[in-house]
Image (cartoon, rainbow, N blue to C red; front, side):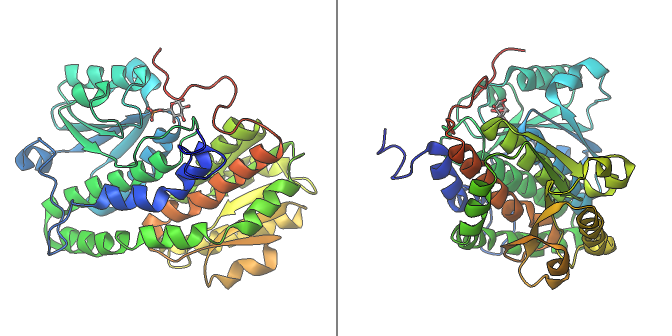
Length: 372
Ligand code: G6P
């Protein structure tokens, strides 16, 4: 078993460290020499994809957070409306789906019953279905019109890490491909983003080598009762995922919020010493979102929160209001989840370990849930 873990103490740690490769492999072979995306593997004809009028993403758990990231990215890049539905809710809300709807399922295992049932229902309603999946030959891809595999390799730890980054990557690839099909300035923009995406695996690698302070913070926090996570735009699902990891692995009450929602309720939770992670959008994020999140940090700090700030290298505006600054390499705003997620995974792993818990097999959870 030690050999299977590649020298790491746990599968989760190994899988966190495999993320540069998971992202790189998911990009590999999907572009030609000119940098254009080639997705012949999608057996849906280009004409049919050009006619897509709306996209619905169905998934559960961590995969659903990948779907939330995808919504922001695909809508921005293609202007096609995207909706994200938890798979177990989708079927029971009389979904509005027709032949012009593309239903994209996201599942690491390809066996999650809730997601499978959502896909079957979508097909019955006439939708085209694409599975984003990590497991060859699994059920959901077989029940879908097409599949875009994530090449994360087998994921053993119950809590998803490398599969999540690979799912986000595959969603980007799909969105950029649809943008390319749209042509004109959409295609030009897609090409530029794709070039940046190719640089991300090396940035994750660099980031993984710089997280000693995060581990230290986690070890000091072994007795913490509650942790809050704030993010905005694509940082919002990252905050949700950070909270989920902590619940799953360390059995600590954790909640992720959209930072703008703070003043509408959650700020009441802030009392002296309350730890809050803030996923800060890069300074070049449109609509001045960076400044707005910096104000949020200031607001909660003034009420005594202990602010653990995840910010891009060179972002000095956060420093005066941060108890801790965790740096991530620079990339364009839409691609940041591939970096900002990583310190939160390491934090949950380390805190769980500090509490003496079973990181790979948390209580009450299963790697794939094959019942409804
Ligand atoms: C289970 C796992 C989660 C996972 C979810 C979806 O609940 O514990 O980590 O995110 O299923 O799994 P899937 O295989 O469909 O991605």
